[in-house]
Image 1 (spheres, rainbow over the protein chains, first blue to last red):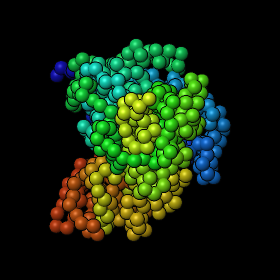
Image 2: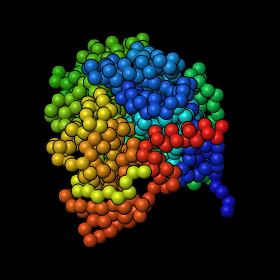
Image 3: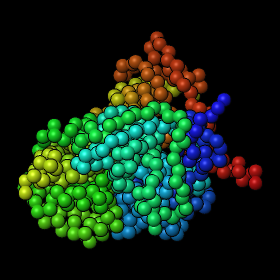
Image 4: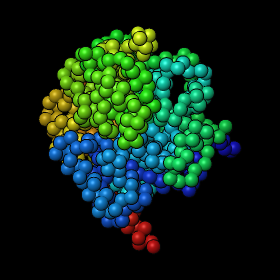
Length: 422
Length: 167
């Protein structure tokens, strides 16, 4: 039988398992890094301690981000456990408050994620690094603890669904709109167990930040991982960051895909996910809802590019009197850049609140949790029942420009509507 | 070896039950099953957690456990004493976590009413419900090794011992 070429994910799993593997194989693979946060880390450490071996220190990355700086005694106890573990074993890759940020942003900024790397992370949005051409997979805590001791884990090599997204993107369309449109099309289960591969001229047109957003929310379609072919923009991003040598890598021309979905980029527009499900998507022009809170942050859309876009809308304008705007940079680096570029001043002068980095209210942790009946438009990734607070609160998901415009209008609105009023 | 026959009373849940519903994030300040259990599904079905008896079975719809990677979702279900989750399909990290923590999970589409008794034979791959029997696909060989070990920790310990004895 003549074998066809391989998808990118088949290539990475072949390399890391030392076998010639295809979609459907269950394999044991050597991971390059295993990452845990302050919620998923402590159970991983408990699991690891039962193995009775020394930790693979160079592979382990510890990034407290969900409930840090600690929000209460219970969360402080949890992050203390992680800190104590880091010091006990003299872990080289522990990112303390003030030197890290949201785990996925740190994994990319600090050069852990490189094309062709296999990274496992005890967080569902680990798939983000596919934006740089890495194969990165969300896993659970206990198995992360096993990797701490063995450096290896079992995986099923996924089928790949390819999205060919071609044509010019309107300048109002951001990475968030691309991925929300994809999720709307295939549903919460449409990418279950799959690698979602995004390519085409529209993807090439987008910068690394937008590509990360697309890879990041692939998890909302149930995906195992995401892959965007690395190019010159990837190379420029990795320059001076990458911790390991890397090579350009891509799927073979004759690789076997489970499905190929073509999307005409010129038809995409800014969209909003209505409360309850990220797949419940409508064009922003069809949504008219008053809001109590506007939130910009998270591993999905808390990067400097996102804050720049928000500031461009907010500059010289004021947040609506009945609305509060909360901006949470996704890392210490993003925070520093936002300060030095004058973006924090613009947001603050508009009547917005800027905090240091944390996952914060994205998962209903703190720094902007919603009360009963409150409505929030958010640049984050999930809007399930009670996600950001009370069970009777609601979350609308959008790109950060729409969030900023909505903060000004006090209701969900297209940025173009706000920008035309001087 | 875990028990291969599981019999219990059914609780029905719908499609796309996400981990924010299973265990809201504000309770993720502990990973102890007993402390998580009282909050299982509390936003969606208040009172469910306290109604579940040890050994009961959850029968859910499609994409059960979608959303975050929080293993606490599986631990909360285990803390309630649930013996088995049957769903039309599972979100992948929830499925991994269940296998790794020793919570039996079966992908099958069965039609039962809440409160019904079902009887499952993990070895034969059958679910008996009322007069009907539904077959399900058993775990692949590799996953079965983890399941038979009781958890991925036990499996990893056995593997490490085996490697040490070989070297």
